[in-house]
Length: 426
Picture 1 (tube, rainbow, N blue to C red):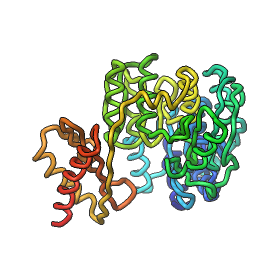
Picture 2: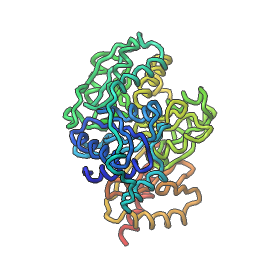
Picture 3: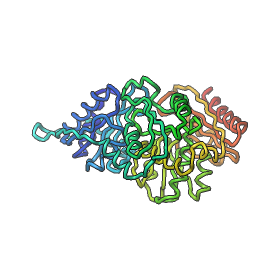
């Protein structure tokens, strides 16, 4: 990720837009990349509004709020501190879809930019108060949390609006890792069971009602229950989906193909239906943008309510979860009501994951009847399912199996692993 690439992306986006927002997360390299993206945008006549260091949901929401055509967010989200990247957003709050990304990539590949002369360059202005507007919106959407004690682990990222909204709504708030620091010195940016030991211990020590954690750009939310237990993403997804089906928006829920059976069970019991998508919140957002969807989410911590916004808004999700906890009495109680499922995973390292997946797909589609090839190959059996898919970021083929008991999940995992081992040995 270089300034040169950010410049080219800015040129490509600016060639098709008049007004573009630019924001970034707390990583040190973000300032340089944001400058480069802004320069590329203005070279092609687009006027740039700089929001500074803001969370991804704040940036995505402001595309529509500030009547812009697009936004470029400089962030590597939940990735480690040395990484960085660019996220592109539309006025609906939705990330650029595949067609829009293809247009950007084609412009870059062909160097087809609408470069302007010196007298037609775009302008650049700053905009203060973006995070405050997000907080004000959240306060308007939710009622008082005066009886709730919550611990919020910001992971040194941009999740501060969550804390400010809880304070405005009278909750008893304790903040962990609240100082913005792009090195993420206190824990890994991605909130997982392994990285949130400090949050679990703090919730227990303070006898808090709820623990919440964001990643570096606050588009993810994970949770710790009042008993100090980490709440798996599939469980949160089931709880959010069930709640959403009680409100307006439709009877359908969109989830990626690696989602637990728990979610489909809960959604079906609530009178809804599940639609599977490719892995990635971009694909979930594309689906829930269609009519009839009440909610979409990913077990990794991205939650989308289409009647609210098409971006994963972890600030909104934090308050929605708090609302659930207040209504039910405890998060541990909500979790305990749900049936358990056994998920097992393995990774197979390979330098030729595309070829391996082609051979795996051929084998599995020729062997099994109930096969979904939307993203990798998912095989559904009477007693569970397994999924084989290539990692999007690493030289790995990932295998996931799930059933209602450990023995069956292990058998399904071994079944899938055998096929992968056989094709990689060729």
